[in-house]
Image (cartoon, rainbow, N blue to C red; front, side, top):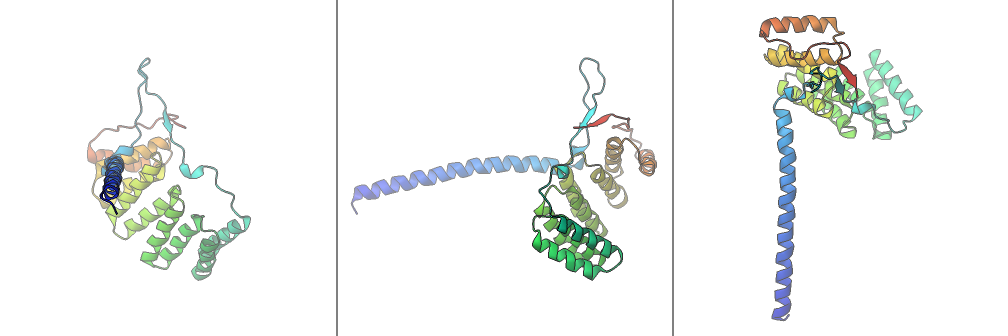
Length: 249
């Protein structure tokens, strides 16, 4: 091979490497930016508390526009047979025939791999049978199959809480809020976690305020709990419960 051809090959190779490094740096910067944003969001769950804006003309608070539940977007066509089998498995599980229910649901996960519901139900069955690791794996698989199924995040977080994994539970609630920041049940459950298990009453108060705000204060039991929290923290309510202050987007 002549020296000229070798020279050309070396130049091409160097240009290709430089191009890869540049692209890699850009990708890394982009990923780093995304990661930074995620870390900011995850650092404190209070990032997801609803915030109301003031109308500059009237100086009145604008109605808060709630984001829709991502899990309620039009689903793909689901087989009527799959629905019947799923409902049958739930019914059987309630009658304490967990093995029969498990057989039905495991079959559903194989025949309909894109459905997250069967994985959630399988996690419930494992929980009933005290199979801890399988519970977590089933719920996580359900989330992997359909990351928009906000209900599975709550199931997983509650289970982690019952296992004493409070930080993991908190992280899972935050995952749900990252997906849908106006998810009332996520706000309520993380409030319970903060107050009862993590000794952070002020954070509990803020999330309980969010729950009551998003649900217009209809839960009297939660309202009593919130009033008790306010007495303990000595902090005023930041998000007042008002009828029709939050509207669906």
